[in-house]
Image (cartoon, rainbow over all chains, first blue to last red; front, side, top):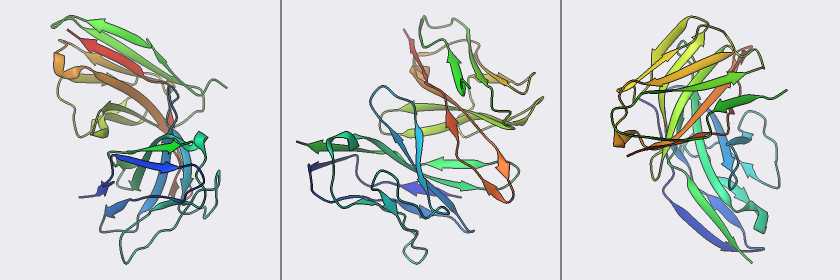
Length: 110
Length: 115
């Protein structure tokens, strides 16, 4: 069974401070991992995916297969980063089965 | 392109009433999904569809039914609403290209309250 764990429900940081949102996964195969973001009163949208190896809005995430982690990082938090962040794992099996974590609310304090 | 749209945006039901939530996508995606979002529980898959005319159960299907008569539409039905079905419902769609599954595109959500 696949599982995604986001241990923090709420993460509060000051503007300009580094951010790390934790995500650990459990999956026996080769996972495809994503971070989705939901800003206030907006729909969920993709932030980044591990296969792209790109930086979006200053955020990066590295897949660590040894630690089964996919933590989201940003060196300097901005107020507009305040949102709900979901880590998600995608697997095959006839359809795209996506398992979401419970989400972490990031609050950036001015 | 409108992307993924959902109707209605809000709804209040009484216990035992029925309703249908409509999801529509104009991106010609094969896969469509219905999730519910509850505080502290993230998104949980209710039902999904891998193509027109096919549907399957997700992790929390009880009390819901779905239909996908047209590729662009995915309907979620509640036959006899219960207070436990108070939630925010999200529809999503996605597609497969090569060997990779791509991002899911989400609708704006439907906030349902069952009294």
